[in-house]
Length: 203
Ligand SMILES: *[C@@H]1O[C@H](CO)[C@@H](O)[C@H](O)[C@H]1NC(C)=O
Ligand SMILES: *[C@@H]1O[C@H](CO)[C@@H](O)[C@H](O)[C@H]1NC(C)=O
Ligand SMILES: *[C@@H]1O[C@H](CO)[C@@H](O)[C@H](O)[C@H]1NC(C)=O
Ligand SMILES: *[C@@H]1O[C@H](CO)[C@@H](O)[C@H](O)[C@H]1NC(C)=O
Ligand SMILES: *[C@@H]1O[C@H](CO)[C@@H](O)[C@H](O)[C@H]1NC(C)=O
Image (cartoon, rainbow, N blue to C red; front, side):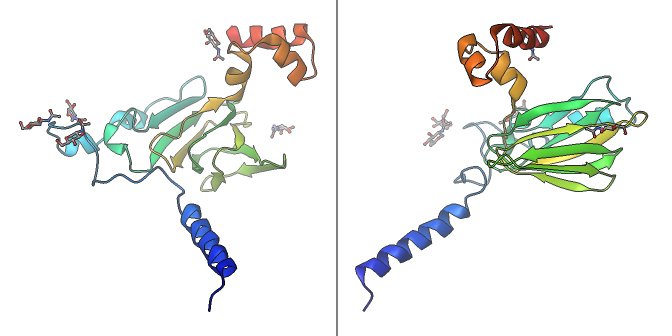
């Protein structure tokens, strides 16, 4: 006979496995999702916005070209998206998080200094060379930096969500209307220092 205790434990175990397998967007109940009564064809599954990269010049500042469900609506419910990241010499992708997805970054050109911080505040940093792939776990603070003095860098990132979302920490914390007293106290700092940081972001 199985005791009630054992049944309870087994149920907890089953639910733990069940939940641990939900790593992407919620499943959709169709092959793909489009608005009712609209006709679609292969073009609705095609994104041509990256063609500009072929033979193009590097931009002068860090640039992310995204293809998420905002750019390609048929990605809705497919749990995947891409971004092409271009880093001219010295460019930084500031500390940020993607709340809904892990990021798997493939360095196609140049070198990159990357890192993320886990919830125990351990920093994991790496110097990437061409051909390297690095994973930024879902929801963790991370950054990328091209510290080379001559070569630009180009990376392609895959995300495990059709809408990974991005929160830039400098912007989300210092360039919104969070009451300055909260920021002073949060950073054990003075109003003048907080204002200085805020002014820097407004420029
Ligand atoms: C599409 O049509 C179906 C059946 O007519 C309906 O149940 C569903 O709510 C509609 N969806 C939208 C987004 O209008
Ligand atoms: C879609 O078209 C069918 C047939 O023309 C119609 O009955 C239905 O109400 C339409 N649905 C929507 C959401 O417009
Ligand atoms: C499909 O693509 C066409 C243009 O190729 C566009 O006009 C239409 O809105 C798209 N339909 C959907 C459901 O995204
Ligand atoms: C950038 O490169 C310089 C010169 O090699 C080095 O001193 C510095 O530590 C590097 N910074 C980072 C963040 O990798
Ligand atoms: C900060 O906010 C201002 C005003 O909303 C905006 O013009 C500026 O681009 C923002 N700066 C950053 C770094 O997001």
